[in-house]
Image 1 (cartoon, rainbow, N blue to C red):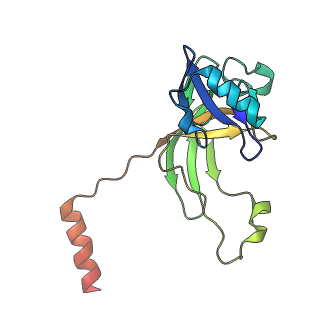
Image 2 (tube, rainbow, N blue to C red):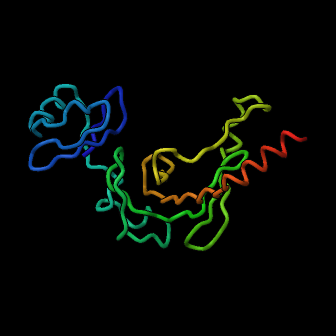
Image 3 (tube, rainbow, N blue to C red):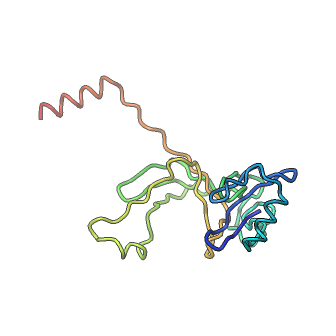
Length: 176
């Protein structure tokens, strides 16, 4: 379920057998609490409780992009279980963002920030879009900001440079 408070947005809380087993910030202190205790606290603070719109079981197929297979899902900590919409292969950083190849149709993707959002930055120092460092997925949201699924990202392998080749480059740089 999700808890929506006055001062915070939707926060995922997972219960199993009447006990909270996982809770995201700012309610992570609730782990181990009984579900009745959480419901009483939610009533006292006038928090709204709802089942997450993003869970694979509650999504209706009309809100998903065409060709989405609902059988493959991925567990995210903040949003719970979400359907995998696509896989992006050979992801690597570029000068202004990152690139990938879409697995479903082989299309080349260039991921950068939306130019309309860049107006608040100086033109000589725009922000650079980067892949998430600690996750192997990107959450896709609808126009309301609700997560509808994830795209699995598979990073490009790093090129192996032998020690001998590195020494040669260093010597060439010193000689120049």
